[in-house]
Length: 309
Image (cartoon, rainbow, N blue to C red; front, side, top):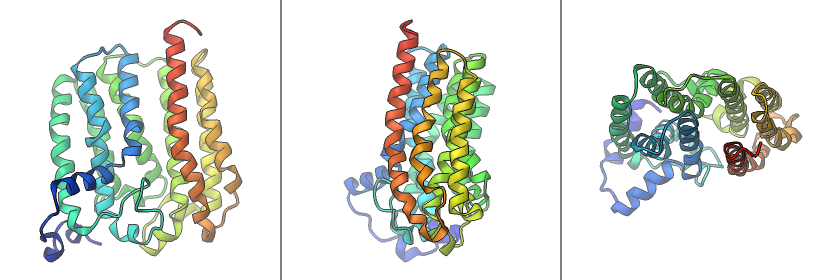
């Protein structure tokens, strides 16, 4: 599907009357993947506070931005330009992603752009040249992943790098916005987070191998194959754990966080391409492991801040 088709060449499909405002809100919320909001807002807020930022307007605005508008831009653009492959994908239609009717494509693209603009302008104005550069990279990575021509999601390995950037860059932005000098703990944590993100994206692509190939979409999983991609993801999680060990005590305790992810996908390490949909239960476990991991990280941060460790 061309970009023109997605945003309006099919005038009949896209110009029909819109349903109620409530329906529009439901569509926009669904396109933003509420289950994933915390995955980008939490890294920013935690990094900003731990790097010396205060309980101020910058924290509130930044957290709100990475909570909803950022995710609407990320997933909404993806839903529009992945429409054809989503139609063939049996896991689309719930918390793992909506199949966005063509009639909503233009609305979602406009809503994503307009909702991001005031937040980005504010965060650029209150930030520095360095923090604004990080924010620019973050927004560019979100758009470049799915938008026509760039389509980083169709460039194997670069797709996983870009996807990981989506989640790590808010933390980097928070750190730079607070004016902190990155030390050993911060660097080790960001490296571990990045490796975790690449491993998670690669594993997530396994279940879509058949649907992506039918739609002519490339990914790290269509390139490596199911079993090899699972094994690469396992290696990524293992390396993330090793990277956290370099943070020193007590941060190295977080090295246990990637281990359940590794264990969860290990039984799929010999999966064949034709069996790729067998990875879906593993992906659902991944979705529920995330809040558990966030809880454990939070408890570790609280314990450190209270001097218990």
